[in-house]
Length: 180
Image (cartoon, rainbow, N blue to C red; front, side, top):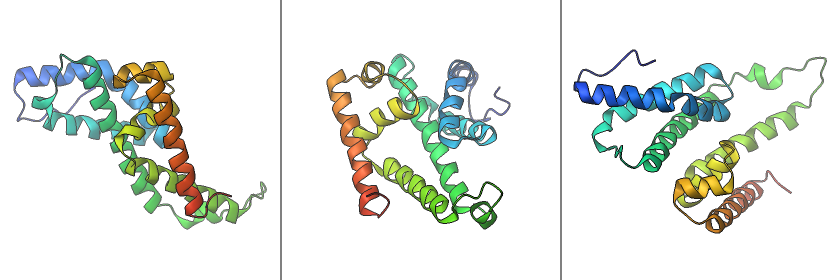
């Protein structure tokens, strides 16, 4: 529910923002939660996304449903990655060095976490041509066909872009010493 609507919005814009929230907030939450793996941070990402959307509301073309949906998911995805980067910078050392009866290898765990965050960094810096299809299929779970429709590209183009994106991430991880 939108509790805060900027005073700068007129009644029509407030109504438009409310409708967008009601229609897309649950799916945006799912997308953010898939990235963050934390309900509260996912809620924050959706909130932050709608604050950003409110600032750009006059630019949103609500006649093109696919473009609008793509825009909303790009905004929430970027907000989620921003929160993820902040979390990465704030991880207490206790979380990494905690050795319990489970006896996991701290070095392997830290290395895996570093590789994960590095992969996210690579993906967020990737050109949208490759990042979009990769995000829609891998994170959001859409099929190649559904992603192609959303991105208004052919299915074979999307499959090629996903393959290239995965190779780019793998190559970058290997260059950084995270792969074999």
